[in-house]
Length: 317
Image (cartoon, rainbow, N blue to C red; front, side, top):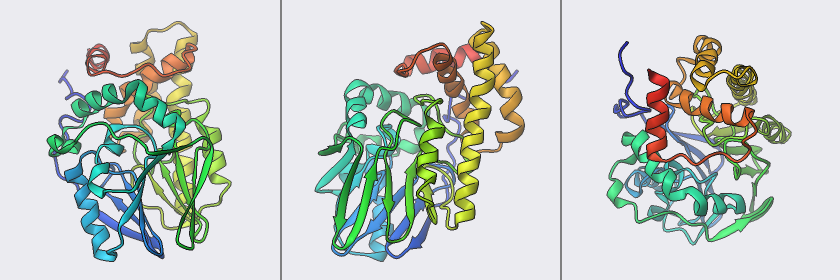
């Protein structure tokens, strides 16, 4: 059996950037299943949702923003704490960096470990890693919801519940019915569930769905420009979570090993999702977290670079 490259270490091919307009002053920067960035243009300033992994990579987003506006980026919103989402923030020179209070706590608890871990998993996503000045810290936090006005444009920033992480944030633009979901919703990309709360995630998606988004920028995958595409993405995300968790929970209940649970999950998920972006990357981490949660571990264990390698080696034998 050929040994698989760890996580995404073998994924070195440059992806095609797409800059999609979803409404007046509302854009999605997407790159074939890599982490997305959202842009909201107000009367006098810009808000960016998720930053890319390095300042050099963030400048690619900025170059597209500058094609449509010369207004300054006043706000950066972090949908959660993962390094690929937050470490490019300094490039935007924002006045404020906004995150949920739970995300702020997770940066304290595991921000450096996550950075070290993700750097090892995603070498292509950390172009010019030496441009990162350090961990990205929020300057404004909120518990459940905060409102920001970009001139007359109202933006609602909300923590609807635990999902991809304990601190996930979504951004809602009422004047256009457009949602920026972070990794709470994906589109034809595997959900990374290594720090997830499987049993809470579906309810959180249900709360997001209740806003009836007319368009949505997912954490990964194409911008969703119609209500039908939004509904499809929500359904696919919910199905992915169920298909991952159910066989692993059944295996754990029988006292099976993690490796046997991994095989059981593959039997269900491979036929449906093997062509999804980062599927092979995510699967071992997803099974490990589902196995832990099934065994009563509510607070996800911290991934370190060493834990990554040990788990990967054990499951690839």
